[in-house]
Image (cartoon, rainbow over all chains, first blue to last red; front, side):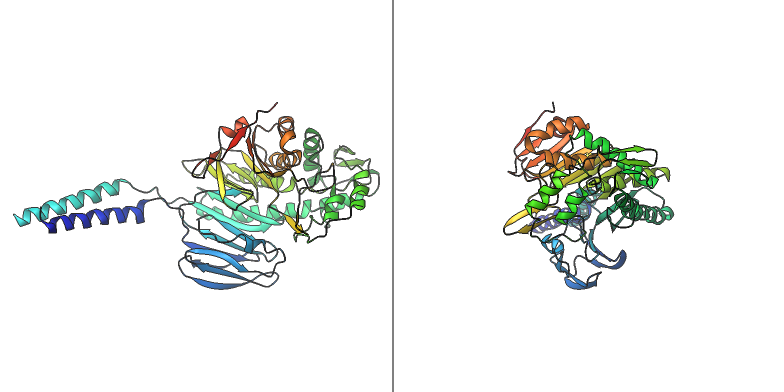
Length: 119
Length: 352
């Protein structure tokens, strides 16, 4: 077997492993972010697109930040800031709501780790 | 010769690709999930294997149920329970809206079973602390003299008698606040409604109160349990058909004042927040029972919870003390799965 043969086989094996990881393995990372305000869907965006989104809620604007495949409430007009303290979300199925401002942020994806969280 | 080698390489790659295609992913599920805010919390409904043209209608009906029960069960607004609370200002007999009767009867039973630790009759005390509002209070905590004054009135779920839709009240200081059972009750009622509409697989959740109908395809519904001191799900359980799980924690609703934390779960024996427990998770077939039991065991604390669990008919309990020590009932030990790399230390506490 020549060096070229080995390189070809190595490349083929790497290709197979890469395809398996990207297409077949069950990972729980989210892919999209769904945002609702006042019980209405207002935006669905990719978790891959880093950006800040201003969402008008019942009390004022919530700022939703998407960065490095994660999403969080960056600022909120509510008093207790529970939504901000919750921090970043990235797993499919994670949900966070700012109850006073009536804003809900959900991470969507095919492979949820849990169907729901009891908290 | 070179052509033969090339063919052999192509064949190897082809065979590997064929091998890979054998590991087919499961087909994408017919799953529809919706979330909305009702009863002062986040509600999530997951429908599995429901016809596409039925999903939106069912989710809308479930949403309307939650909104109606929010109206009916709110303690101080002009709904069904608000009206009952108005009538409770004087001893005597009155008619209540029939929608409120079953939950009051169930709450009476659960209160008695919990030796009064679950006590929805302390509405005045909950209002004094300000925990009945959607927006959390900021402090300071109420004056001790006012707490003692309300304690002396001894409001209890045994201070009234229900006959049909008539309520005979024996204590004018009773005010109902169903915050420790209302969400579980609503989850149970919505699950019942969805079943009557033909739904065979669904998950209905309102914050810590979650009820399973059927399964998630070829597996049971999988529920993560949040750790009380970090926001990760450190454990999980599988809910079988018709089971409900409920968690009560000191991290759900609280405020800090002068460096001290005041959580929303009030001990009816002292009038102050129960402070020996970080969180309690229980499983039961009735979501309202699970909701009330989680609160009762939280208040019971590390020594008393096994006795109260036994009395309330709860066999599966995860109890985390304020010192972060984990205790499991034998039933919960057999079904909990820790999601951490290594299982945390815990002790198994048998029920009496």
